[in-house]
Image (cartoon, rainbow, N blue to C red):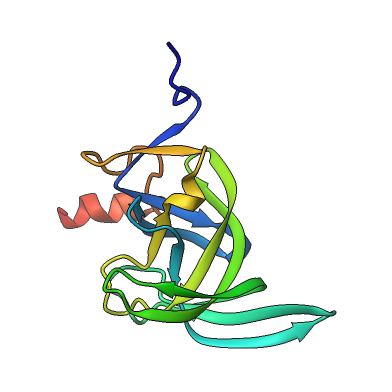
Length: 162
C-alpha cells in the first residue's frame, strides 16, 4: 500500500536553506512541524510602494549568534496577519512569498517577518510551507541542505588545526 510519502523529501529537524529571491545564500533553519507559519528574523522593516506594488525592505542577521553580519532584503507583500508565537503572544506580521531552496529542492513559501534576536534559529520553516513537499525525521539534522563552504576555507581550517 502506498502512503503518498514516496515523493516527499525527508528533512532533518534543522537544515541549511537558501532564499535566493532575498539574496540569502544560506541560513540555518529549524524545521518546525509545530509551527503553522514560517518565520524569518527581520528588523528595520519598512513598507513602501514600487510600480504599484506594496513591498517591504528589511534587514536580517543571517548567521546564527552573529549580530554584525547584515543582509538587506526587499520583497513583495502578500499580506499582513496576526500570528501567535509559541508563547501565545499575538503579533501583526508582514507576510512575503519567496522560493525556499533546500538541497536540490525548490518551492515557494509564505514567510512572516518578525524579530527573532532572542531565538537560536533565524528562520523557522513551518508545516504549511512543507505541506505535500516534505516530511521530517526529528532524529536527524542536515539531511538535505548542506552548509556551503567558501573557497579556501577548508585549507584555512586544516592549517589552523580546527
